[in-house]
Length: 124
Length: 124
View 1 (cartoon, rainbow over the protein chains, first blue to last red):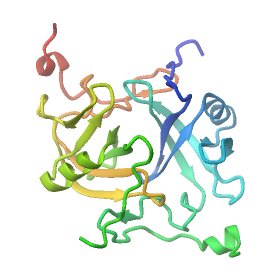
View 2 (cartoon, helix red, strand yellow; view 1 turned 180 degrees about the vertical axis):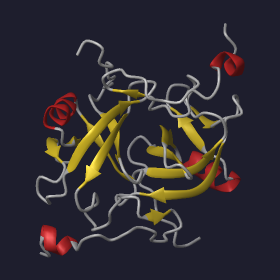
View 3 (tube, helix red, strand yellow; view 1 turned 45 degrees about the vertical axis):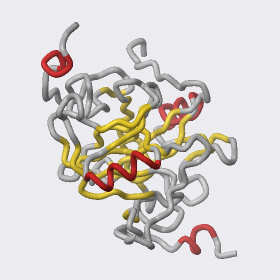
View 4 (cartoon, rainbow over the protein chains, first blue to last red; view 1 turned 90 degrees about the horizontal axis):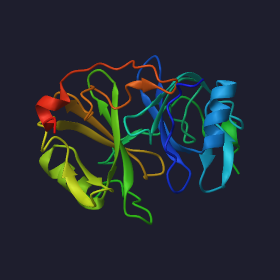
């Protein structure tokens, strides 16, 4: 794959990745990606990210079952941001919403709730 | 506006903002936003960002005319990422493409060219 775009992972070794529903166009979430996470994403066809708080590689949906099947990975003009076009199983957000962007900045809830997080993550 | 979501600007005082075409759903670009940039965005109804390389507040389209009229600002679950829903004048990308995400990671150009950058930014 000689013509692959060379991603600029910068000083901290991470780039932001936007996950977008490939069918509806809904922006689902933003998370960070390391070189290893990108490699896993491309090899498995399922979205992987790097958790800055837990400091580890992370497969989206590994716990919840809400995986993201990759349809395409795009790179922006500066090659320092990724766009994952995905088929989202269930909801992207741990709050039970389809998208993490379920609130306006005025605090209005405009998102769709698609599952009960207590059923997925437990309620303790 | 007491119920506004309190954005977590973190250690560096910036959050990533995804700009999405409010009508087509196309993801146009990602850039960073300071508290001042967010304030200008909300006050003027046009997208403002903070340039990390130039270290300054920046109104999208101030030079090119390719402004972004804000339809809605959304905040994600962790309140550390913004989504600007915009009406994009011309193209979001300095390369002449409608979206900055005009390439797949395999290097294929899948984007729409909407203007000649030489006409907008000069060719020197």
